[in-house]
Length: 116
Length: 116
Image 1 (cartoon, rainbow over the protein chains, first blue to last red):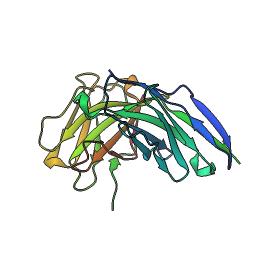
Image 2 (image 1 turned 90 degrees about the horizontal axis):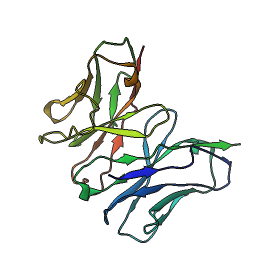
Image 3 (image 1 turned 90 degrees about the vertical axis):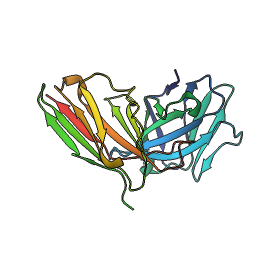
Image 4 (image 1 turned 180 degrees about the vertical axis):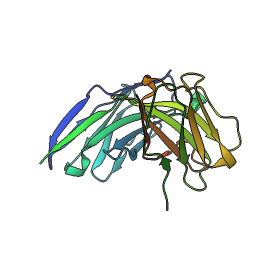
């Protein structure tokens, strides 16, 4: 079974600085997708960024970028120029279409605080 | 357009009572998912519906949990004889057709269930 591990329960960053959230996963699949979701206090999960495993180029979305290391099974999220609105829970998630299931497998999350 | 909606937003019930949680997916979305988020944990998959196909119930934790989806749209998650360990946030997500390859899921705001 696939597992997703986020080893940092909490992180903090100064406003305008850069922070990196870690995620590792375990899978025997070769083709899969990885996601970072943001969950603010409103509880609504928002997709931040998606990475396709067969693409070597790291995905970027404005201030958000990932460092995808397929061999190491590592998928970290970098937030540049942190803003107060970035404060939230961040979840790393895995989806492997070859597994025959359409569920996302989530890590336990990292709570990010942004210090003004 | 309107996003995924869930009702009620919060539900407090007594141990042993039955509860029903409702999810209205985005119009036109064929796939619907239920997840459970316990305090300090990531999201745990419960059940998946795709069109008129038989649902994937592999994540339901016990036979006290059931879900149905009427007319391929609205879904109801029912928990019978609630227990205190059922206290959690229940999140619903939906996906548009043609996205199962990368499984883009749009989440609702969840229902916070508290069992006293």
